[in-house]
Image (cartoon, rainbow, N blue to C red):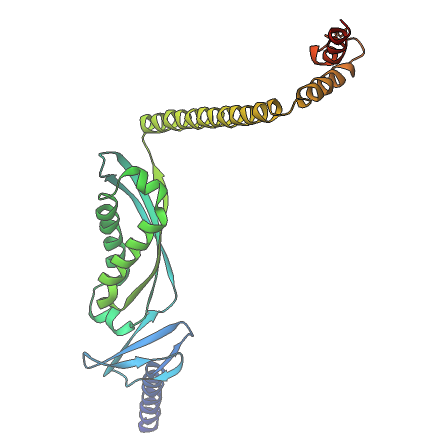
Amino acid sequence: MFGLGVSFFWIIALAFIIVIIASAIRVLLEYERGVVFRLGRFAGVKGPGLKFIIPIIDQMKKVNMRTVAMDVPPQDIITRDNVSIKVNAVLYFRVVHPEKALIEVDNYLYATSQLAQTSLRSVLGQVELDDLLAQRDKINHNLQEILDRQTDPWGVKISNVEIKHVDLPAEMQRAMARQAEAERERRAKVIHATGELEASTALADAAKQISSQSGALQLRFLQTMTEIATEKNSTILFPMPLDLLKPFLETTSKEK
């Protein structure tokens, strides 16, 4: 009976030792860091691999160090020129100081998401609709700087912010379509007028050049007749230029 009690005791002791050893062993993946708290106080950060902690006394919290792609839900925004729109975005960030991400803020993922939503409404409310549509890269950069500055105390690095979609009201879409059509018509008229001006200038220069040479007009006339003559079904009336008859007229007047 005494032997059975001793055996049971050793079995319990061995199981207790196994549990203690198992609780002291931690395995961290390459993208994870372990923040160790010893009796409630911060004791250090452990890297990836097989790690040992003091059972009961130490407590380890794992932090994911990979880049997180967080979707910012659509936000109702009134732009500077009083246009109501819905805008959503995507946020890319990662933890660079795991101890700050656990100590300085409660649930850094939720805090970063809420900060991104409020900053998106605040920044886009200060720009006009045309600037939002035409200068999206600049706005993305401004958002990234603002969020990165505010999340730095949390040990979070904002790497990029991208506005994904701007949902415009139907009446605003129709107004912009009419504006774009009017702009295209204006450009077409300007291009046509510019072409007419250049053509008239070129024709005026050509007329001056031809008028300065006595035979140039006749050569141009003959060239035109040659182009017309290529059409076999054309009837050509060839007026005799007076300049060609001028030598004969002068000879006749001299004989008289």
